[in-house]
Amino acid sequence: MAALLLPTLLCSCNDDEQFTNGAGTKLEFSQDTISFDTVFTGITSKTERIRVYNRNDKGVRIANVKLESGGTSGFMMNVDGQNGVSINDVEVLGDDSVFVFVKVNLPVSSSMESEKITDAIVFTLENGTQQKVLLEASGQNAKVMTGEVLKGDNVFTADELPRVVYDSLVVEKGASLRLLAGTTLYFHNGASLIVHGQLTAEGTQENPVTLRGDRLDKILDYLPYDRLENQWGGVYLAASCQGCTLNHTDIHSGNFGIFCDGIEGNVSITNSVIHNVAGSGLYLKDSKALVANTQISNAKYDCVSIFGGTSEFIHCTIAQFYPWKADHGHALYVSNYIDTEEHLVQAANFYNCFITGYSDDEVYGSPGEQTLNLHFNNCVLLTDVSDGAYFHDCIGESKDSTTYKASNFKILDTHAYIYDFRLDTLSIARGKGSTTYSALYPDDMNGVERGTSPDAGCYQFQ
Image (cartoon, rainbow, N blue to C red; front, side, top):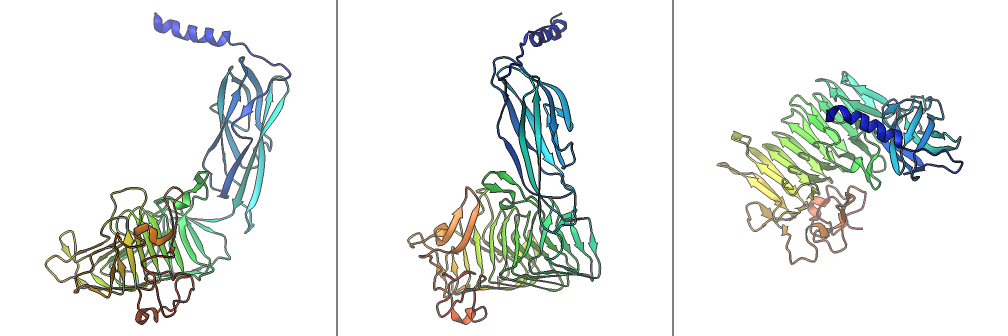
């Protein structure tokens, strides 16, 4: 009996609600404008919301809520659970509110430049009063690539529409992909660049090549998604890969950075950045790699993992300041084994490098029963450097130093996730490099001349 009475009681409560349509009756809004960051045309944006308040002690009837454009602008709305471009008879009870949800899918055009699109949500009350909430977004045309496999020789340039990759971009065995200066590839969540052939990125200091996620908006007012990890996959170099050469390339915010799966060709990474990833930064399995003038930072696993192969690092900053979890990997991990499987390190040599992080020891070597062919020359490291078999003219970071760990660098903002790994004035890495190795790279990754007193790491203090 009680269950049968409940709907009647609820209806009685609604019937008792009094409504006002006086001339001075108005609504209030949590914001008067909804602004979307730049969105790619043809791709639906995230959903924004506003709250519509009735500050009266009596209910207010909204005769109509509509998109001023009639739905031609690309904006879409949901008013109190109803989708449409024009919605009638919305009630807001006294001292209550309703939500309006808005998203946008902007129409594709041929323009290379971003275009600003505006619209408005028009609220018409029962008393005839009209109020508006403005809508605005900038649309960037793009070429959407879904599950594409590249054959033959391919060249992507900055003069073309941005490319947004879904379901990964694959370079077939025997094929090649060249990314010219200024090219940016935007990868959707989970999408990766998978290379069975050959990859070349020819960025410059002024116009780097960038591989990043496709979220252009912000998770908070001060925090773009682009500063977060795990926004896309990463770069996977398959065993059949004939080579990978990256110069002035920025790879960030992925699930991982670069995974080298025992590739046939050589890996060359210069003047580049691998930053903020949810897995390994640079994973080298049985690979032949040269890494120089490069920053590898903030990885949930190890920033650099080396299993077997031959690798050489010159003037690199390897900084493990992963901010999202205390339990993370090392700045550098070198081992002759993956689990119980043997992958003997033929040589892993580090020259004029700066290797540091949050932990008390950021360099980990696992030789097993074999000799670990690992050597450091003129490096600054957050580890014990007393073993002369591995460390030659190296400096170990100390708590007694003027700078220690994070204080060596210009900016490590763990609130807004802004990192600037250029050296602070008093950094322990200043002047600790050798001119023997800096002669190979006389300028740092930003073009600053190292001179006769080279700093350890990829940045020369200026």
